Amino acid sequence: MKFKICHVTTYRYDEPVTDSVNEIRLAPRTNYRQSCYHHSVAIEPNAPLLTYEDGFGNRIHAFTVNASHRELVIRSESTVVTHDNDGLRKRVLTPEEDWAALASDAVQNKYAEYLIPTPYTEANDAVAAFAASCRRPGAGVYEQTMELVSSIYKEFEYRPNATRIGTTPAELLEGRAGVCQDFAHLMIAACRLSGIPARYASGYHFIGDLQSRAADFEQASHAWVEAYIPGTGWLGFDPTNNHRVDGRYIKLGHGRDYLDIVPVKGIYRGTPNQRLFVDVDVQLIDK
Image (cartoon, rainbow, N blue to C red; front, top):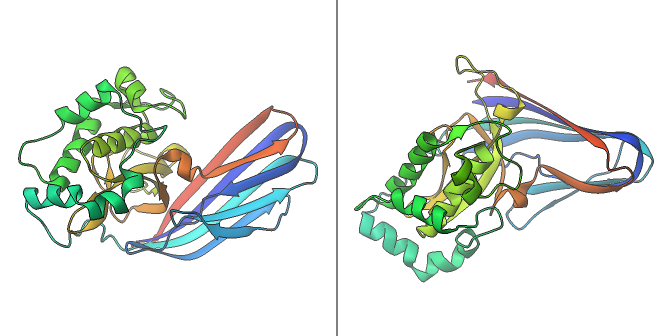
């Protein structure tokens, strides 16, 4: 599937500001399941871009606007082809082989950063109890991961504005409602408690072809989970929609949790009164 993505972020300030220093993570990755054929970033006021990769392999664009301004516009445009092969498992192991592989020093050492808790995936007794309730005797790692996907989808309500940016898995369990970021963090916490390396993935989810839904920003910009499956590697899982990642997902990047891949972040000198506007348009241009 071939997509054209336009992502526009606008900051408006009540008074002129200066010395705005920013970094953005809005460049789609090129990997085994997608190819980014075009990506451009335009800044208003105009500013030169510095490009580099972080420790997770995500592409970052950094820029500084020193001059006085009352509006900052970041326009990112991309053309991406997805290959829809994320569902392929290379080699299916027995449940015993699965869990033995995860317990090995090789996996524990290589993926240590995706096994330890982070500020957004911290687990308390309630999170541990939820993870335990999703375990099925005799299930392999893939089956266990899919059980988490299904349980989160069934037990929690998707409700915008029910949570905040820093909501933890424990708080989600109390409120029983949230958004994709919250569901991803809960699933990551539960995976790690079970010894499954898991990471937070962000990007876009094309849903314009689904009836009774519109592809607005809240739905087009999306978060899901990638879990390490022995014998195969990293596979994508979406607890918000109760299915595996397929060709309708365009990945921007991944990290330990949301804090590692915030799309736009920065600081500036001036008034704290600002308004944020985000517009995302994901168009399917070729199946």
